[in-house]
Amino acid sequence: MLPMEPNRRRQLLRALEIEAWVRPRAKSELELASMAQQAAAPVMAAPLAPPADAPQDTVMARPPKSKPAAAPQALLVNDAPEVAPYVAPRDWAGLAAAVAGCERCKLCRTRTNTVFGVGPQNAPLLVVGEGPGADEDAQGEPFVGRAGKLLDEMLKAIGRSRNDNTFIANVVKCRPPGNRDPEPDEVAACRPYLDRQIEILQPKLILALGRIAAQRLLATDEPLSKLRGPVFEYGSSKTPVLITYHPAYLLRSPGEKAKSWVDLKRVHRFLDAKG
Ligand code: URA
Ligand code: SF4
Image (cartoon, rainbow, N blue to C red):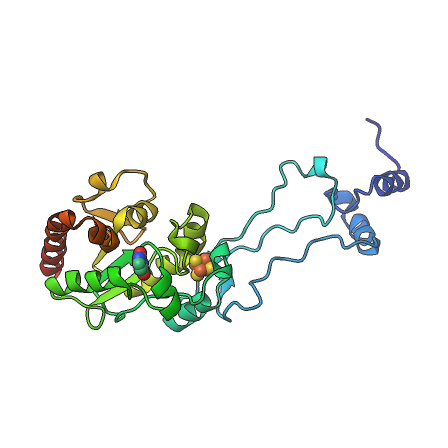
């Protein structure tokens, strides 16, 4: 193709309304930049900012590439916006505040209270459930209903409680409506909070309760029968993870309590060995 006269080229681009997204070549960079400034429509989308209610120390790890405001569809192929990963606050109070005001997934629309978790920050054991139920949603604390009472008894049997040596949290901090399972996108949206909790708490062991918590935590589809027993590792910290039944399941199937006792003894031995 013959090189085009700059004015002609500009006219053509304007006619096609494509000046905004045409990458200037090195030679005509200044020229096109001033064209962009003159264009009536906004040219570049504003860089993605943290949500207005995000805590001050929330940072976006990578600003996304600016992209054209209203480019023709066909020309957006291979120009998918890059979504910056959310970086949760690094301090406990900031993290708790971020969760309290979180709107990162649709569960925020139906919750009454967020449920951050409960227990001391130096707890060697972190218990992870699936998500708040009706009682937890009402009170803002995990495992306070019938299943929670059973969990407290199970923990007590191995010398543990939320008051001194066990932290209790869930894979999602807001109640899934109607007690449905948390959906993968909700778990993914909430994951930075749990990950930061684990990073700050540095538990010696994570005990996941039930199939959903276990599968979501370990990103697997394996049935609970395969997940009970082995010690898994979580994240880059390689925190050991054990899996047992959910206390709500044990309330429905009391015959399985004997097997959960086997798991609890394993938890006890593991933590004992770790000092
Ligand atoms: N079930 C859970 O998985 N978590 C709670 O907090 C309560 C019930
Ligand atoms: Fe935010 Fe988690 Fe609640 Fe979703 S479930 S709104 S990600 S705190």
